Amino acid sequence: MPAHAAEPLSPAKGTVLLTISGNIEQTNAPGRAEFDRDMLEALGRKSFKTTFVMSGKTHLFEGVSLRAVLERIGSKGTVIRASALNDYEIDIPWDDLKYDPLIAMSADGEVLKLRDKGPLWIVYPRDDHSALRDDIHDSRWVWQLNRLRIVRP
Ligand SMILES: Nc1nc2c(c(=O)[nH]1)N[C@H]1C(S)=C(S)[C@@H](COP(=O)(O)O)O[C@H]1N2
Ligand SMILES: [Mo]
Image (cartoon, rainbow, N blue to C red; front, top):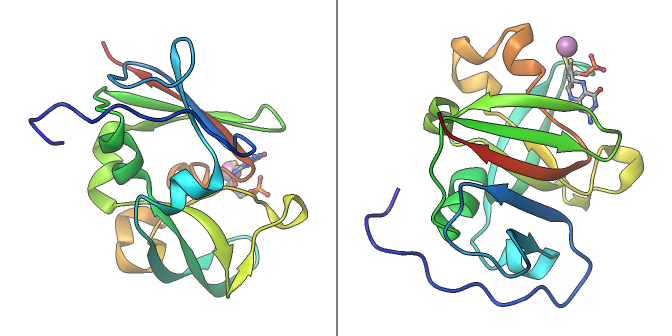
């Protein structure tokens, strides 16, 4: 995480895809940071190919680094509580950022729609690290992600 303070965040102009609350430095709405698609894309594109355990198929996932999003708002914590549109919720340990998981916005060149686990889907580089190939890490592939809460001790 950067030592310097993150720059102020402008309010979202488009549909808010991701809301982050908890231990964050920058907000653009009361107590929270809201991101639309353009704001997420402006943080830089990242992509990798990896296998989704449910289908057993390898896809090229593209999106933004979860770490880059958290850095942008000067966030620090021990746990990232990730929630989805269907109210699925799981705790991601801060330490997982070392794997640089992606907030994917497209797969194989197609923008992720709600019906294909979008618009935002947390994806890990599963094929690159044997430690990621277990049920615990598979459960952190939160699809239809819409909220993050940064928790610290
Ligand atoms: N939004 C959302 N994401 C989710 C889930 C879910 O139910 N809803 N299930 C998780 C679990 S437990 C696993 S193992 C993987 C694979 O999905 P599965 O529930 O179909 O096995 O996605 C994870 N992401
Ligand atoms: Mo699971």
